[in-house]
Length: 390
Image 1 (tube, rainbow, N blue to C red):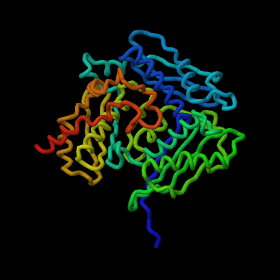
Image 2: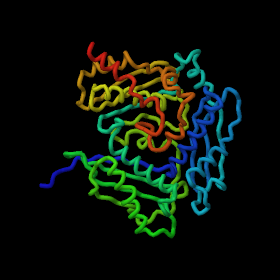
Image 3: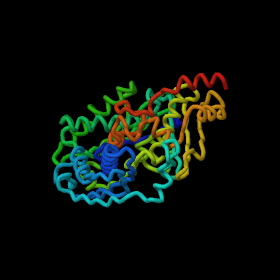
């Protein structure tokens, strides 16, 4: 009898994917709003289709500054590479409609506290954080590899090496965990020009993208692979498939290896715990795993709108814990301040040393190329010392 394989698959998408176009515009608007007013309240979403972009949501700037949302969107679209009429979505010519309004006063009165420590969560909800010692950055291997594939493909497109490539791309990686970790299958769909040589195009993807990425992880290169399974992929981006902010939450997090919270990240200022508490949950999980508490750990946080403390904290260790779950919860409660205001303060989320737009592609976690404070391992020693006393 043929052995049943233990497989797991994750996917990533490029910055030219229609949903990611919307995420980037929403986060670029957030960046500009926080640059103007560190206490800006932003809940911005975008919808993109053929030659059209809609910007909606609620934004309040306390200094009443005027932000040119349409111009921000245009710059993002052109930077991605949608700059030709043949794409049917051109930053120079597409219609951009602005339907931004002010934040509800009912929400504001629950969020704007008298001090940062006491501000309430911007909404109710539950968030998850995850870490495992599977990779150097404490992320699941399938999503890390999928991100690297589309990031490399995009880089080669932009420097002119990936001839005939257009902005919209996807990568899907299946890892075989049956015995030693192996790459089982890689699937890539890459948008291309009408007159490209498909044989050369596919050979480039295999030889210059798939194989180098797999080798960088010191894994097998005899994997199965599929490239543009439908045969051609000329029409893509918002003209080929409607884009919407927040629709790639699994790509943004852990590739399905961990559970997902109830809300997306992009276009939301850090008073929205959908974003800030998800970052905090990753921080807690990563430091706990790095300290040897468990080989993999998932944490769930929940909040109520206007409330300054979590309603609940739950953990799952997948039977890999080295100490009891009760002791792990004790460590979390003693060492991590999970009030929304303190998350914002400790991570400097209203005056970040990074751009939120940079996080809108290739995941919000495990990023060596972005200075994310929630990726720091600055609690490991404290955790180890507390473990000895419990």
